[in-house]
Image 1 (cartoon, rainbow, N blue to C red):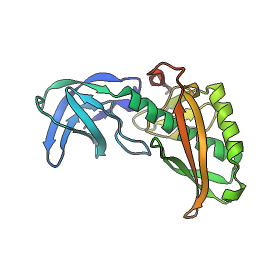
Image 2: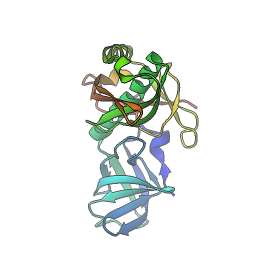
Image 3: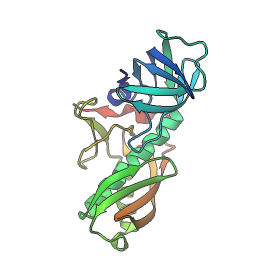
Image 4: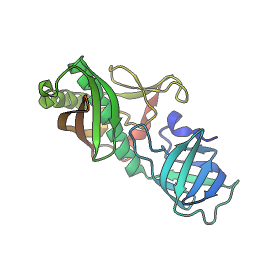
Length: 231
């Protein structure tokens, strides 16, 4: 079993962990007793970084474990205690996109009560949120959404973790409704420079709204890791 430490203490960019298993098949996989690496899923790309000297190329869920794919496990052995370190630039970019997707969903639902967010894809350069409901795409205003997003960013609303982070974890942005989420986020919206709606279209009975997001250059490199946890 891997303790998913990133759920409870997302400010950790470096920590130690014990190697529980080394699996050598088509790829080399390391399993640890705990991890700060976010696995790919929930609309978010996997974290990158290092486990000891091993370069982590991909991270996935595997039942109650987390599989860390590495370029090589040379020099590592089961039972070793190693340092694990995230690529902070990559984590920050994914945190910005994930928060932007949730904010977009909250803003659209507030402006158009007939729409409900049902899925999100927050990969950098591929951001989109899909909505169900009875509001036609032609009646949705990108300008109105952008104005609300810009106002929320200017207020630098807080982003908080609520409830038990391992069992009932939810994310709340400002006073918007809390939603279940296991992803990583910025600590306040001021860490996002901009969110731009790039497309609105009907697809397979849903409304798809695409977006781009940019980190704010005015914040310290890892300031997003100060995400507050409320229980």
